[in-house]
Amino acid sequence: MGLLFVERLEGEGVFRCRRCRVDAASKDAIISRDFYGRTGRAYLFDHVVNICLGPNEDRNLVTGLHTVNDIYCSCCQQILGWRYERAYEQSQKYKEGKYILERARMVKDG
Image (cartoon, rainbow, N blue to C red):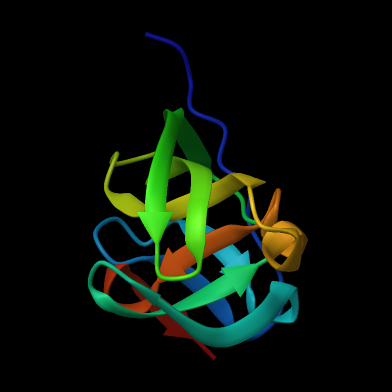
């Protein structure tokens, strides 16, 4: 088995996987705090690290139909949220390529 490369984030306000505590995102990458996931409140980020993407899946979310990929912690495989691959409504296109991290699945340091 090979070595696992883990990217570390510097500074205060780092969001980490609740299960294994590996870095996932910086508070500086938050686009919006006004989102909800399967487990409650969630944040929209423009950049995350140490994740694996699941397969494309069409989901009918509150804001309409989207193609998304679930995202998993690269260390412990805990589901953390999802990535917006495609938005079908013009008003939702800003989400494409962005990430949702669910607060219940994260801890924040700093």
